[in-house]
Image (cartoon, rainbow, N blue to C red):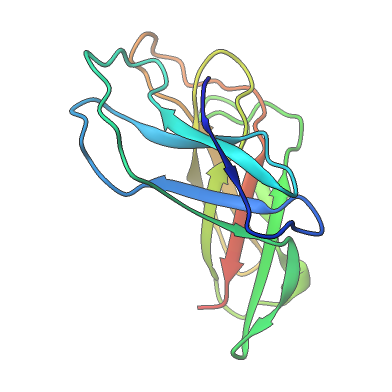
Amino acid sequence: YIGDQLSFSAPFQNVPAVLHTLNTYNNADFMTSLATTITTNGFQIAQEYAETTPSSIVQETIAWIAFETGSGTSTGQKYIVGIDDNGIANGVDNVEYIIDYTSVGYETSPDLVAAVIGENGPDGAWARGSGTFSNTSQGVFAEEDQEKDPERSHVSEPIAWVAFES
């Protein structure tokens, strides 16, 4: 893994939740983004192609946003931001990771965005909803491709997430 080192314009008080995604589609092969080595001052970001073997890698534009963890309201709307790693394998063939936001008191299911922010194990992964979704929790898998093998087991990965009142 070799990523570009990015620095925040001002340091965060705590390690922030960094959400990221590719904003372009310049490669014919599957790709996603990956943020790692997150500190209060910055992080590394790169293109992630998991187990696929692209014939050539074309540069993509990666968008990202960093949030201080915690909860509150903005323009009257509730939000909560977190970083979690439960230490349990949470690939699609394993057990979903449950993001619990009961403390916020959403009346309906919030809008939630999640991203993998680590590189544990030999296979790449990205965050994917598991089907569990309510006003108190969202299930997430560390999804991986099936390019070189049919299994979708994956080691535990840290997940950054933010839920906004919808």
